[in-house]
Image (tube, rainbow, N blue to C red; front, side, top):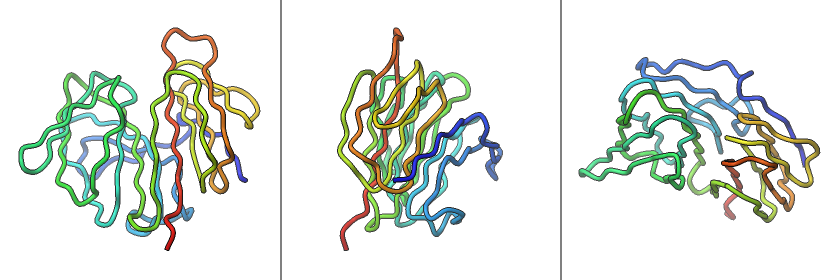
Length: 193
């Protein structure tokens, strides 16, 4: 088991080529892999303007809103999905044509990408205590309020995370005193071959 504490504010944002936003890469596996070679990738994006998402062939994606008024994701064929503060994480294929239309100003979102056939991800939005089974890797991200997690030591404040690159143990996650606690928990598991 390897455990790393991450302060998202300390990660330099990388601007998008289209100028509509930026990304803070939290973790990628294997470390140092580019956008075409990763097994899994965790990141936070700030979207400033309406824009299409990049295409990732052979990748399963999941997105959750962290901050902002929300957005509507427009998919090919006229489908639309609204992503708001209370929304469950939204899953879609990396090959899909998806464009984000902001409701009212910039939004921050959390992104999980896994190589289809190699890894799968379970992404859960939390507002209270939860228990999770072991997995190959995982992440707890505090969004609002302070959070603790057994077996990790210490407390996470908003926009801090614990990352298990290898060997996520059985975990109990719980918020400390807060009127509106929110966190995201990601379980990453290699797919049997």
